[in-house]
Length: 410
Image 1 (cartoon, rainbow, N blue to C red):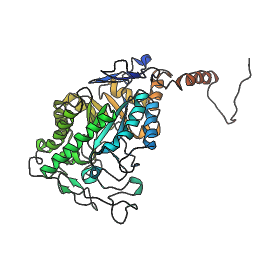
Image 2: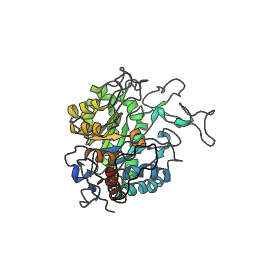
Image 3: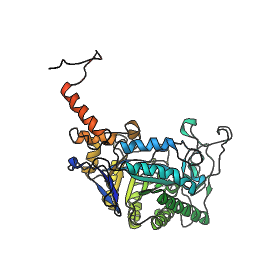
Image 4: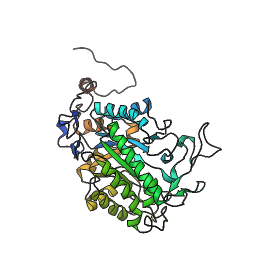
């Protein structure tokens, strides 16, 4: 289905379909970006956002509406939330799953809608490790227990790099054996293959926010004494094995992303230098971009905090590892987003909470950066809104307090 001015296509589909915005060719934020055989119409991405709102991993109408609104809002790519590669790898009972072929149809329905609106579809594959078996956030913090479990639900054993609990009151996870590591790696591969069957354009591997792959990377959670622990090289080994295996299974014309925590919350954990080294290894394995976040291990946040606070991490990884990056972290404004891309700090800008607050952020940004263009809106809305905009412009702002403010016909 053609949509006014959009374009998203893969190399085998050169005619594509989607929404270009040719009138903002001078805008870095709305310049197309090609990653392997995929071309995105703009650099705005909806980051994975856990909704904890499914049963047994199956997405339904909620996710179609939740994610579909961002496609209507003009984002170049939408990434489905952290999706468990095994039932035990879910953060909570409410997590999306892709450990079974039965999950494919529901996700394919989402992909079809996103593609129909010219938006690329990504999915984040994840294993929560020691953070699995958690309560849904609105049910309270911490792990599921016999006392706080919902009816029909129960806790399950967790795993990690080492026997290091998430924090006080959390269970001690089982330290994965070498044989079990191979099983987890193959679960990621199997989920990636199912993602391909569902039609996703992009897979992102979750190695951030204190989940399993991050638990291997961080010296705060990885205390192993075998080949998978100790030095940075050894701590990177298992995450890189997962990346290598998924890259081999994921088609060569489709991008693979990895989300990282550039630093742990504590200065005693992962450093930006560690993550630059990791990113170099990711690039060597064929990863196409690094989604740069932070924290998740080490308590709070012992680093600067404010608007765009994680953008410097993305910029440094981009410069020193020579790999495209995606910036996140209190990005709230169109011109802020434009400056990030135009200034070379990152190639993509990902929004989460800001997108939830304004699902039309992308089309609003396009209007702001083009002096009022409605070209990025869906054809069902854009022309009508453009006409309304001209009328409102001729009338001036509503000043109140009278709700009726009219002018007499000439």
